[in-house]
Length: 237
Image 1 (tube, rainbow, N blue to C red):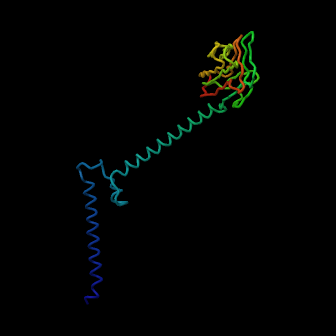
Image 2: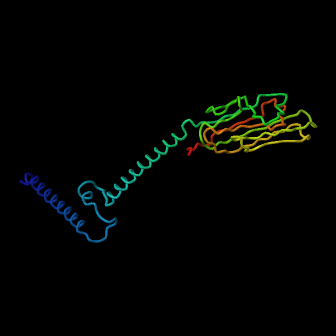
């Protein structure tokens, strides 16, 4: 009889244990819900803790809300960066502007002339944006912006005792910006370089001119140079 009764006894014990476990679970849940003291983080997520997954804590909802807020903010930042990038591309479109040119090599002299003469730098190694005209030696700004310009004045009279007499100047729309000069009989060779920053509107012209009565001599290596480039563009008001 005993062996036959064993399965029944085991089933009864199992049901009792399950009922006790259920009762204990309900008691734990009721105790948690009715607890009136202070909690570690402000409140329990009872649905999460008792109905869904183990190890679910009371900060699940705040973490979810933080994640949502962070994601929303990142989307906003990405949209702002995309808009800024579009504005930059629109502003700088076609604004790759730079040039470098030198005088043709010569063993004689350029000048002197009876009036100021624009220097034609005909040996062009770079003319991005096509702002420089080698026939006139003039740069015309294709776009408004801040530009950097440099020019080098070189002259050699061959031997000491001869007069080194030169003066060149950088001009913006017929207005003097910078100049370089030399007048002595002690040096037979001289070179100087000037660099300036200029704000230009579209169509402004910049060039280098040789002063009347002065001359540049003996430039057998193309050291007289004129160059410029756009630092950054700006909208023309």
